[in-house]
Amino acid sequence: MASAQPVFTDIAWTDLGFLAEATLRTLAIAAAATGTGTVAGVAVGCVLATIPALVAKAVAALLDVFRSVPLIIQLVLFDSFVSIFGLPLSAFTSGTIVLSAYCCALVAFLTKAGIDSIPAPLRRAARSLGMSSTQEFIHVAWPIGLRAMFPSWLGIALSLLKDSSLVSVLGYVELIRASRMLITRTQEPFLILTVVGLIFFLISYPVARLGARLERRWQS
Image (cartoon, rainbow, N blue to C red):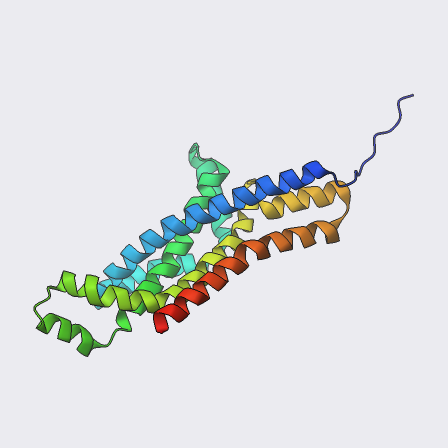
């Protein structure tokens, strides 16, 4: 009679490699979503700051859908849409699209607020010096608005890094899903979650400190 195979196994060194791979996958989807969403959000925010107020309100209402609906619901609904229409999208692609749309909505409002925070007399002074509206935006409005936006944008980027764990509902094996798989196999939740928490800290803390340093330099 064959001996029964153990249900649970101990943590092995290969599990660290598994977590390292999952960390890279987490960074990949967070970077792709943050980069794409930021570029799109800045473009949309600039448009919101320049188009008529009535049109801007209509666009803002659409963006509010992405800001207000929980990300996990957006992911599940988008995945259902992909399945219904048979679109050949991987979990990485689907997750990146949803996270990018969410990031775009946040950055768009942030960009508009940064541009609107610039005193009107300053912008009029730039125009009085002979600058065109494009030159005034590039050389005056955008640099000043960027300094006001940066701390909040950094918060969005770090939040998106942590929110990327929700993509696990699509079957994407990022850091949190990998930790759950290891916990199920080893029954060592405390140790594994401590390691995963430390990984997130080591990723986030240097970025936050760099952002604070840049902010202090800009304000000096």
